[in-house]
Image (tube, rainbow, N blue to C red):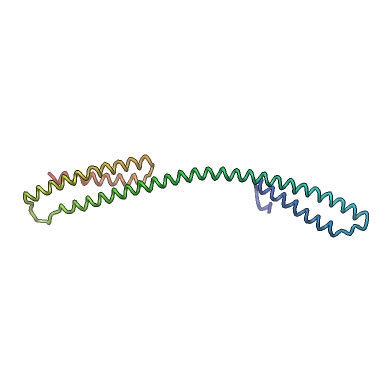
Length: 195
């Protein structure tokens, strides 16, 4: 497994070392258990194996301590990373909420403009019809009302465009700029209509 990991972390290294000692303890235990201990050679071999078993036991003890230290360090790093991510997530959420709010504002503005445009369509007269003095008076009043409603909408669109620029919401900035231009064009058309 160690050969598959090019640059193992200290945590992985400590696990691999600990695993190696544990495997060696099991191997030594099995070997010692099966020894007959009938000759001096067997006793010498058993003594060497017991000595190695003791070394591995110390290795396990040291390995557990090292693993614990590495786990503590890894947890501290993970907690620090989680704090950074939480801060970034809060920033992203605030940005998302701001974007959503601005888009809702744009949607409401669009609804107001649509309603005003529909009321403008009511001013159209059938082709070939002539305006009476009363029709002209009503038309003049309606155009003044329309103009009174149009100016705040243009200002609201400009304010929303400025806010989008400050918030760096490019798509909203472009959409509101287009709306400002359309409303300005409608205002100019009304001026020519009055003349």
